Length: 365
Image (cartoon, rainbow, N blue to C red; front, top):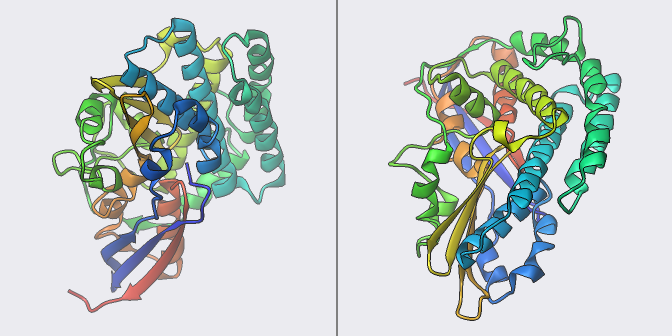
């Protein structure tokens, strides 16, 4: 979900002996899209979104359209809703696979070829611009299973085949040993939407840059979705667990698409829209990295007068967010691998922009 303009997240980890004493996050730069969108008709901006957001472009388009329709009080047909949900899921699957390739299997030539082949098939789904593309979708999804099998994903539970590229990658991550502090996890869900969207168009834009829920900063993304499905709040949450959650979701979404992408059995809250008041609307979309929010306000002529968005990275890489809580107080048991351990955990949160990582020594407390 990165913006086309260059930006990154800077993470500084302070070490007191073998323990992480503090974590500082300098967030990415956010351009003033409100100024860019103000006074423009919605139709002229829909095609601009993929150029502004190089990742999750379909999710942004769906969120924007849904927010606009809510602001206008327009109803959406069931066929359109079904199409948008399938589109978002196909793009989510593509982004999860991209993260698998870039973060874990880029050096494995066979795996990289398999993932690229699968992403090419999925591009048929994401690139279809209109509802009613059943035959094309069927042809694409029919070729998913053998490609997943080549990676080591042979069933819907996502358990990697022994000896497969994924199994070997998980084994390598398990060799990076560190001891995190026990922590209570909280997760962003569709039940939080009303609370969040109600604050996106307030005069203070901090609700978009530094969001919170009653002073809590919940996590969002594949591992959070898995924990909510399992109804758990306490669990191991290292790079291995997060990779397994990604793989499980890849298998599950592929199975859903292959079975016909029936909305009736889809997870809750993939695409939701909210009419806030006259001429104001918002939408939430569950994309690869978590929950994405758009909110718009229209003027008397029906043009955009306000536009705001809140992306998953704003939650996960918040200064008091889940990444910081996961790192704070952890003990790096093998100092020679300290950078690998921390970098692996940061990457497992899959930020929508690049990140830098710096270490500094501090006096023991």
